[in-house]
Image (cartoon, rainbow, N blue to C red; front, side, top):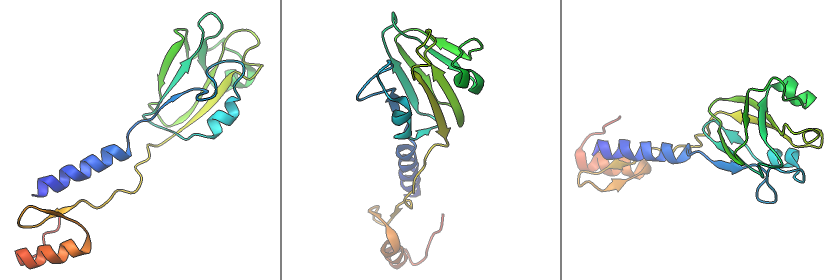
Length: 158
């Protein structure tokens, strides 16, 4: 019976920490020169474990990850990594700030760059694990404690 409660708690925790995938610029744009990326980023919170996807025409753009200095100067000279598939998925595996820009001449200066602040994975409020009665029925809350005590004659704390 206790195993069912532990499994339920684990399932709740997994749902609360599920990763989110974002397509940069969506739903109104993509990785292009027409999207307001400052507005797009401001409307989202990125968590460790999330993914961002850059979708673009390979003939017209690329994606370059740079440090803060490269981002501020719109320079891809000392890049961290470069992507050119047209459908690049970047895993946000660590808390911190990441910087991306289009490395083609003039594109970054025209606003084709994003700063992504990655925060710790949100666990949200986790519900107390359910308890089970002597008959195996799942019950929850203070009422469950009273019912369990009445049925079992004692209280088990785990």
